[in-house]
Image (cartoon, rainbow, N blue to C red; front, side):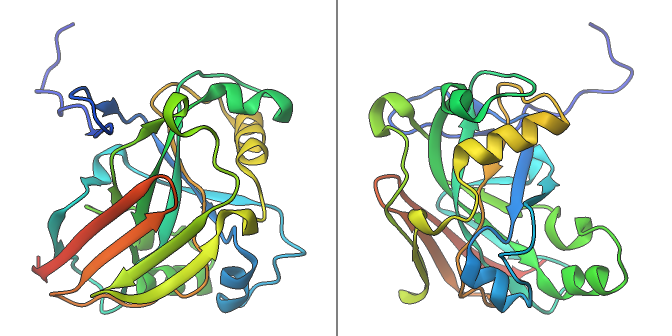
Length: 231
């Protein structure tokens, strides 16, 4: 196929213990999927259905990288998340069949320009400027289901300069992985290469240049990013 301009390189993330990488198609993110985090954001988790936002595929950053503090914000936040990698596509996927579509799991950090997100929220505008910016999806190597199974419980934790800032358990997810997949697939077809960031626990907070931020999910390893000087 011929293009009028040179196509961008395929965005990808690493796979644990494999040289081959995972091609990223889309990144779906689940908003406020831990009750305590929903409350710290001023929402009642018992009354709201799940909602989603997206990040561009090329927002991904490998584990262990240093990234610049992003522009147009004074309030960059961390958000530890478990990642779900979709290996088999589908539409209107039944909740009972949803895990058959999962290739693997990983650990990520949904970096957020919180001041821009809140400004958009107050005006009823999309969250893109707060969530979908360059280097905003830090994702550690993925682990195939054949090696880690389907995590339903296990500690999820985040530290900044080795100080614990977030700590919860995957069992506290409001909407489970099968429910998330089923709900997403009713709205659009999921396809191989899609990633889902499943939500973050309470304790979100700011990062500044020089901070070393590490998210960990029990059984899935850790994901570290260092915040460099402003871009």
